[in-house]
Image (cartoon, rainbow, N blue to C red):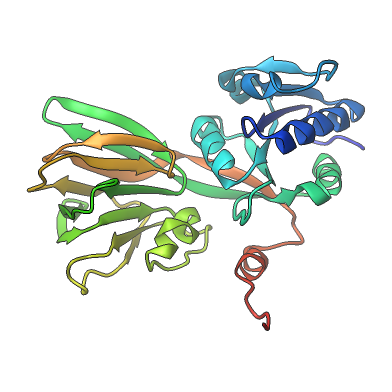
Length: 293
C-alpha cells in the first residue's frame, strides 16, 4: 500500500464487542504494514491483544494528531465519534458491524480493499452539518451540546403528551400537544424522523426537519426549514419530567418553561466515501428499492 494524505490514523471501536476487538487488531496490523502511525482510543486499546503496535490515546489527542479516524462498530458508534471529534473536522470512515448502517462506509467483508483504496487516495469527502443545542432555564444555560442525527423532546417511559410552542427566527410557528418533537439534520432524516413520517433529505442540503411524533392534531405535519434558521422550542403546561435525547444516546431532564434552542453548528462532520458509490446507491441498498419479492 502507498499512503497519501494519511500519515497518522486513529481507530475507535464499539466497546465490549468481540468482533470489534478482532477487527481493530487486524486494522492495526494492516496500518503497521503500510508504515502508518497508529493511534487507538484508550478504551478500545484496552481490549486489544498484547503485541499490537499502536499508541493508546485519548479522544482529544486523536482530534489534534490524527489525519484520519476509522470507527469500527455501527452507526451509533460513528454518531458518538462525530459529536466528540467534529470540532477538529478530521475525516471519518465507518466500518459497519451493525444491521443497517446508513453512515458506515464499509463492512468487515471488504474492509481490506476499502482501506487500501483510502490510503491510495481513492476517496471523496462529504461534509455533513451538525446540530448545536442550547437548553435555557431561568438561571441560565442548562446544557450546550451537539448532535449529528437528531434532537428529540419526549416524555420517556410515561405515556403522556408533551405540550410545546415552536418559534423559527423569533416567529411563532405552531403550538402542539404530541408524544414528542424531532428536530433532525439531513443526515438524521433517515433515522427516527423517517420512522415518524418525515421526508428523506439529501445530506448535501443545509436544512432542518421538524417532525411531530403522534401529534394530537393531525394537521401538525413535518416541515423542512433553512439551515440558517434558529429554532426555539418552549415547554408549556407540562407537569412532571420531560426528556431531551441527542442522537438516541445522550439524555437530559427538562422542566416546564425550559427553552431549547437549535441551530446549525459551526463545525461540519467530514465523512469519506467511495467515489464510485453515491447517496442514491446507499438508499437503494438499505431500503431495497427496486427489488422484487
